[in-house]
Amino acid sequence: MSNYIERFSTSERVLHWIVTCSFFTLLLSGLGLFSRLFNGYFALFGDGRNAILVHKIAGIVFFLSSLYMFLSHKKDVATFDDDDKLWISSKGGYLSRDETHFNIGKYNPGQKLFAIFIAVTTLVLGITGLFIWLPTVFPRWIVQLSLMIHGLMFVGAIMFVVVHVYLATIGNPGTIEAMLYGDVRKRWARKHHPKWYKEVTGENP
Amino acid sequence: MAESINQATRKGFLVDTSRCIGCRSCQVACKQWNKLEADKTNNLGTYENPRDLTPALYNRIRFVEGEGANGDVTWQFLNERCMHCGDAGCMKVCPSPGALYRTKDGIVTYNKEKCISCKYCVSACPFNIPRYGMDDKVSKCHLCQSRIEGGMTPACAKACPTGTLKFGKRSDLIATAQAAKKTLYGVDVLNGLGVVYALEGPPEKYGLPASPSIPLSIFLWKDVIKPLGILGFWGSIGAVLLHYVTIGPKKIDAENGEEKEEAGHE
Image 1 (cartoon, rainbow over the protein chains, first blue to last red):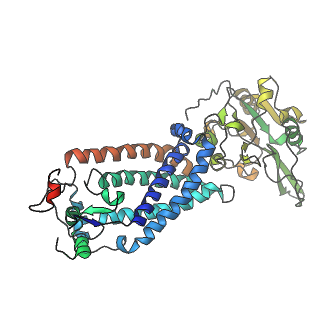
Image 2: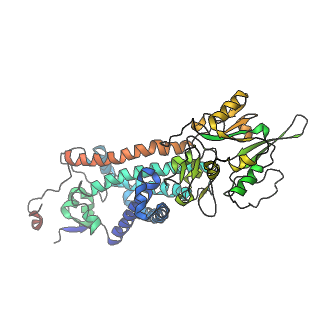
Image 3: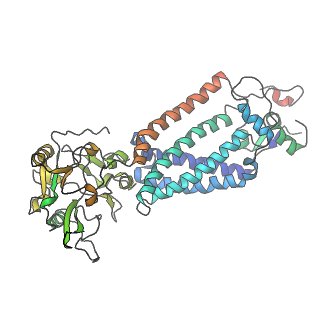
């Protein structure tokens, strides 16, 4: 009997990596636009003009793929049950060295909130990005406000992505396998997502 | 801003609106010296023409039309152009070093070759001056940089027949105008404008903002969100590393009798 169960299908993983790649392309091409301090990052794309072009293309890819990713998982990430509330009240056990057990489904509330946050951020960055793209078409105050909000949401996104990457890699050993080849160890599933494990396998964790 | 400005040697304009007769010699002289194409315009029932700055129109006369005591039309004229702010919003947001820059005379000029067409300067200007043309590059008044460097006055000032446009050392021009009891606009705002006006009424009457400033959202982006964001990024990196070494990861312990084939390396 296999020690592994499937957590993410091939299409889910490919979609996630499209979102990831476009996000980091946006980060690298946008840093020089955020501040002259990061002017050196333009060199990655040749010059500033190219960086803007890459930023626009990657922006469209990220906007569409990120929103699609959220919408296709909306049912799982946008509902919270009583076990989730328990998880939230004890911060998921992340602020203590003690062993903790929560009866969590496929996603824990932290993951759900991150998914919702990224969906909102994608929408806001996309809309403000469009205003910044065409500054002479829209009223000046809208573009001015967009420049500020675009920068603010970028800062929020990058901070949450740092936490996301940490929790998905060294913070929770075994998690990254779900995103690499889709299968996770049963032991990992029983520990982190017992309710989901029972749904999938029918076994009691 | 890091770009310092020497107020003592700074050059600029004093525009005495009381002297202006609306002849628009300044507009024409600018077009001629800078080899700018003519713009197609429409007659909209006013002598003011064109109605706005364009990529090929670096300065123009704004006609302020009013009604006199006995029903006559009154006119006041304002030479509209880049103000060459001491604290310039365009330079604050420009992400391409050397695209918008300040000369040793304190003038805000630009190098089209370095402009990357982001148009941030359009949004950050307190006076809505920069324009983008077919070349998708910034254009605005550069105070005839080449003429100034050659010891001449800008083309507009040279052509002005009434002495409305006076070019020279900014501090001298202001001192003279103040001695003549003129009402000045732009002496101190935005670290002093390079174009100071002597007005005959409130600034709003001329379509000038009473207290011009860099737009609030631009200030928040550059002076609040940027530094706090950089701090926040490194803070979040530090926080997760601290979490790793203090509280530690959620390890999966081996359970009795299960997954024997993996027990060896867990």
